Length: 442
Image (cartoon, rainbow, N blue to C red; front, side, top):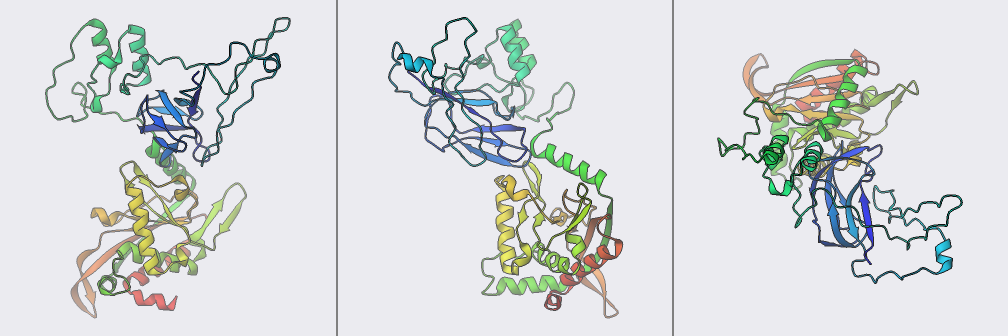
């Protein structure tokens, strides 16, 4: 007989309590193998693909794309023995007396949950109930409405409940909201036998014509970013300083590197030079790479630089890290930054790659913005902001000339970094960018 197992949402990162279902890679009726990717989820830190630890046939998907699910909630049911023989009519007496055992889910990265076979204890004075065969559970109750042919209607849980209460089959409806999502109005119209309103435009603007507003749930990366920024802004006393520099020599040096054989095929950007400058300057001003530990009442100085790079992605702002950036050459930094940003833009940055940074760089210059007052990443004490590099008049040897000019801004935690240290660090970074040859003296 079939052997059903439920696949729960597990904690893929330390402290994860919930995640959003982004997309399913399987549908009911599909045969899957051990460690096959079955679903992509979005946690508060990153998008993660989940493998299934068993082989078998998918019988039911319990949640829909876009739905938020708590850790431990079953999200999929699989028949791990679709061709199994029927169970014996009666179990041997010894088997009946033995309690059913738990069958552990095979260990995977980020997983520690179990598929549990439960058995109720007999009431005192009554005959004990026969134990079920090991690892066999009753088939799950079908969802209302159950998926048909792998199609899962897009509707939020309250809308699904309303449809169930009104006896409306969601499979028969076409959602009128953005992305084909079924709304309460769609369900109520179906229950009343009314037709859906005619579309006034072939272009889906995402706006409700009645209110001219669009509401998006706060979740995933956006929710995490908001919480982190509020925590940082109301915990660390921010100070921001600014410096404008002539980076014409840096841009000329960049052109030389692009033509050199050693840097052939390597993408060298102003961010590459800034990353190197931060690593060098941090060694001369170690306070900038320290952090305030409130619980221990200590300042923790770090003799390494895990450099965070703020990256705008389709899912929001994330800050992946270049580990031990201070040990990398300029060429190695360039390659590491290229790989880091490519992975981030694809939404494949893992939670581990965004943890335990020591200092961050954000580049608003790519958007044509001159400068900004960035908020410090939690767990760090400073963040450097790069503005746009523009042609501007600049005094050189008493004459006004057109030069490549860049504005820097540095926000730092005034509990850890005094004005002197912050100014010295920013001046060092500026000097290295204005004249890359200065790196020889550091």
